[in-house]
Each structure stands twice: as structure tokens, then as C-alpha cells.
Image 1 (cartoon, rainbow, N blue to C red):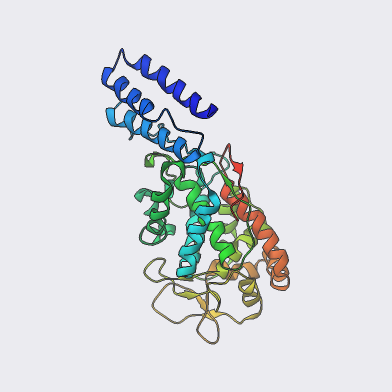
Image 2 (image 1 turned 45 degrees about the horizontal axis):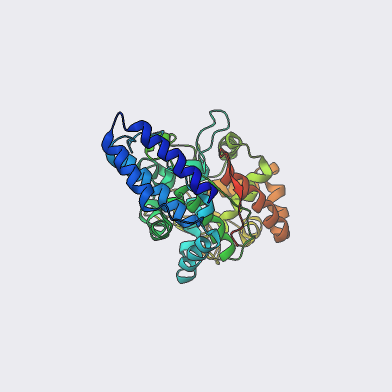
Length: 350
């Protein structure tokens, strides 16, 4: 009730002050407040009230929706994040192959952070904009994971930000596919337009320099991850997400799964990387590696993890100890999802 009273008071004062400039705006804001003055302290109703007033402001042109600095603040108290997680979990249960793509969505929405310029990261939910989806590393997400989340977003409305939804989807998918329960925090605020989209090229690539794994690929990984504030161990731990999913020629141009269990989160990526003989695949596509059975693949930036001694020691460690991998991955993925964010609140979702 206290929060609702404050919202009503501030908006009533704003309505009175705006009357001198826009009488119709004052009338419309007042009508929204009067229509819902009997609301109790239920979070969903508070979110509805705030959404209604913002809609009024935008509808009158007083708060232009296209202005980058006008952002709708989610009222986190009005969201049952366990329920949101349950809805995401149901999507994955119905089709486990969607799980790895949701991890990719969360990863790529977060992996644009730059610790020097202090921009990028998951905080503004910008990966939903076509400008960011057009980045090379995000190929296919605009036709898969982003639309898959729309029904969930619609169900919870403006009280749930896209930024929170996408990052929550990542940790839910990891757990649903057998991985660790990654800590997660809520409170991200969506940008309303794509002006906050960062330049293309901030995500790790599959190959750098000459075709095939070589020192340039190790340098590329360190450049990308060090920019975000990650060290060698965290680079290897996060690379373990390749236990999930597969490459598609229609998206990245590469083809095939990294492991025979692409919908199970485990340490098999490291075990295979460390023990299988990988050779160049003979095909018309980009340079990639295949196993002797020709059913699995690795990218040049995967193989370099066993060529570079500083990376390889962690590959060997995680190949032998799944518990250690889960622990380190959980910490690194939580860090990844919170890069560049402020004001988050630790949230129980599982």
C-alpha cells in the first residue's frame, strides 16, 4: 500500500503540474489513478497501474517512446520469478533442443560487455532489436530463441523485462538440461530503442587468422574475454557450454554437435576435446574438425584450448572432474550475466 500510495502521489503531482502544459494529459493520468485507487499492494496490480500510466504518457506524446532515455522500469516485486522459470522450463521439457539455443541467447545478450567503455552486457535487453540480431554471432536467434520467449513476456507484461527474461532463460535451460543451478538476480531495465546496441564483433568467433586452430585463435579468445574481465580459467569454463547444442549451416555455416549428448549439460565436451583424435573435415564448408566416426565436430577456437598450455591444464582438470567444472562454470556464467548491470537483486528462481 505504501508503494502504491507513493506512485499515486508522485503521478498525481505530475498530473497537476502538467495541467498547465497539457490539460488532456492531466485528465488522462488522473482518470487512470482514479480508476485503480482501490488496488491493494499486489505486485501484479501495481505493475498494471504503472504500465497504464506510462502508456498514457507515451500515448499523449509527452513521453516519446522512441527516446532512448525513456525506459520502463520493471516492478520486480510484481513478478513471480519461480513461475516465469516454470514457464521457460515447460518450453524446454516440450522440446529439449530449444534449451541450448536459450543458453546461447543468454550468453550472447551478456557477452557484449566492455569493461573499458562500460557499455554492453545483458542489462538493457538489446539483443531483441534487429540491429543486434543482425550481428554475425547472433545468426538464427531472431528466428528461434527470441520469438520463443514472446509468449512468456506477454504473459507477465511490463513487470518482466526482456533483459531479465533472456538471462533467466539461460540459467533455467542449464539446470533443466542437467547442469548446475546458477545464481541469478533480477532488476534489469530494458532500453526502449536500439541506440544502446554495441558494435558487431564483440562475441567470440569460431576461427581467427589462418584457417584452423593456431596461436591467433588463443589470442582472439583472450582479447574477447579479457575485454569483459575474464581470465584463462573462466574462458575454458565458459567454453564448456559447448557441451550443449550443435552448429547449423543455415546460421553459423558450421555443422554438427560437439558431443553425442547435445541436450545434456555435462563435462563431455572437455573429455572428448582432451582424448579424441580430431582431424580437418573434408567438405565445402568452413574449416572445422571431426572425430574418426565423423559424427562430432570441434571449431578451431575449441581445438586451441588443448594447443595452448595455459588453457589445456583447465581442459584436463574439467575432463576429470565434472563437479569442479559445474562449480566454476556456475560462477563464471553468473558473472557473465551480471556484467555491466547495476541495482540487481539476488532472486530465488528454482
